[in-house]
Image 1 (spheres, helix red, strand yellow):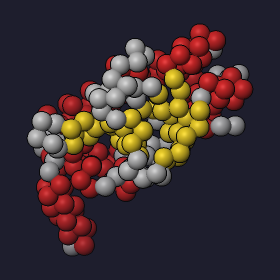
Image 2 (tube, rainbow, N blue to C red; image 1 turned 90 degrees about the horizontal axis):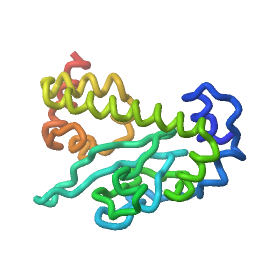
Image 3 (cartoon, helix red, strand yellow; image 1 turned 90 degrees about the vertical axis):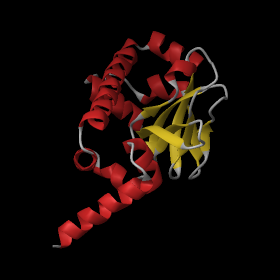
Image 4 (cartoon, rainbow, N blue to C red; image 1 turned 180 degrees about the horizontal axis):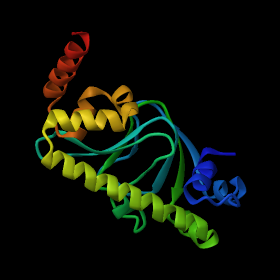
Length: 194
């Protein structure tokens, strides 16, 4: 069974959904490390399900600095939702942080799939609710917690990210400078050794 079908079954508890019901709506794609799947300012054509690898969603601010807003590891979804369904230009770039395999679905196929399989619409509602809650939690943590405490919490909740995400990219996501994150990591290593 494909990882997407397994994920839908796991999230919804519905074992009736099959590869035949989901996979025909998607196109399998592979991307190299640092390759862009979607570019800021270009039309948003796809919604991506990560089969293997890691993606990030970011924008470039007025000073030319990249601001990372989201990551997606295996079994996570990524697109510019505001631009995807209406087919507008994206406000974000989506980049592979490592060799990545995805399933890509167009807006037209997404609508067809949801109409044909109501359980998948239920699946996406749960996925969106979880993503929204995680986004609100991140904003609250960034604005209320001391930076070191925020890093410790993030590290304990998402250890995979700490290992797989380049330091500069992780720093932009956490709202830190790369230098501050480097100092924080050195401090933690020193504490562990003593």
